[in-house]
Image (cartoon, rainbow, N blue to C red; front, side, top):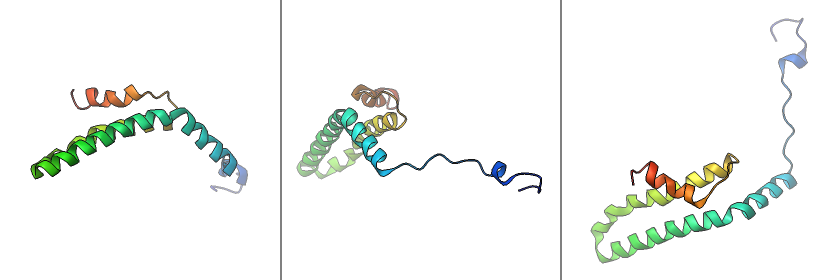
Length: 105
């Protein structure tokens, strides 16, 4: 408070209402319902790349040098999650767009 002339309510802005547990659960279930298939598909691609790398590592240990390839499906998952978090429409193809735009493919 700068001076006594200012009212205490003017110094402290009003905060938004606290979220309730029921509202948080409802929002989480809604997000799960509308976005689960996008994440399942992206996670399946991540799993396929991981299995491919694991089999390659079992066949020849220098294949461990290819593990940075997991960054591409991980970036896809993160991009989809970012769209969902910002409330934008997310598509599975938005996740794959990371491979073309940011990786140069």
